[in-house]
Length: 109
Length: 162
Image (cartoon, rainbow over the protein chains, first blue to last red):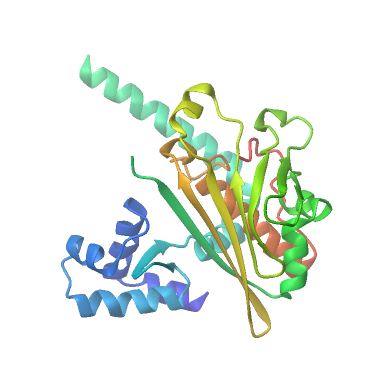
């Protein structure tokens, strides 16, 4: 779990994960296009993310595709949140959605 | 249309034999998969059924087919959910699930790939077990917990699994 927190304690690496969350299964070249970092820096960050198991890679022919692997985060979620809070989080998130929809409607109207 | 793909990697302290058994045996899957029973004919071309527990029959029985079967190493099968008619129209071919088991010292690396999915298979709200993206991590965590500690994760009463 230390490797996970260490990997997440860097904004560039969190940005890389955001990019994969938006668009899962990207090559190094595709990832570099969306990020303001050198190819070397992206490579270095990906190695760390893969070591922490936050990124999984699959070869498709000659292309290495990178995927966001949520399993380590899920383990953190299960450890501190999952068992007891799921119902309440669901209720709160429904409430937030409902209120935001209302607000959007009243803005339009 | 662009197809969606998920890759899940987890390390489980067990043997490839025990993990294979857990993945392919209904008595076992019932314990960690929120009551769902998997029934697989372990050969290429064999049938795969994932039978829902009582009260969740709306999920259908996922009657898929085995594409690749290498015992204790790799299983690939088609995922055949009970789609609403409007989604069934969009699905030109079924999605595929791959389990890959690789021994690594005292652990086994389980890599699960679910490919050829539609946006409709994905649930944006993370605080539910609906959707392929929320369902698999919960099922895999529960499987890991069951193999390592003897206890699955209790999802009790949190509604629809997938």
